[in-house]
Length: 70
Image (cartoon, rainbow, N blue to C red; front, top):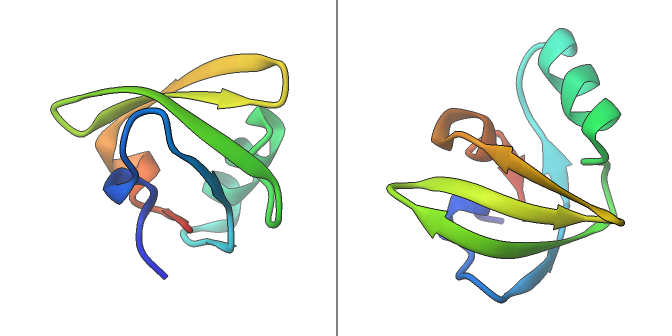
């Protein structure tokens, strides 16, 4: 397993685990980041990511993206 920040732009990955406090995991789940779902990295700039989750695009900063393991 590795953090989501290690994925390259254009790559589609599957979420394996989400770490952090309950509030953080709940917030990410509300954005569509749930275990066994696919996420596509649209672009990356200084560790911050723009991600395609289901039918929407979401921007995550480096610290939040590091909590999502792929």
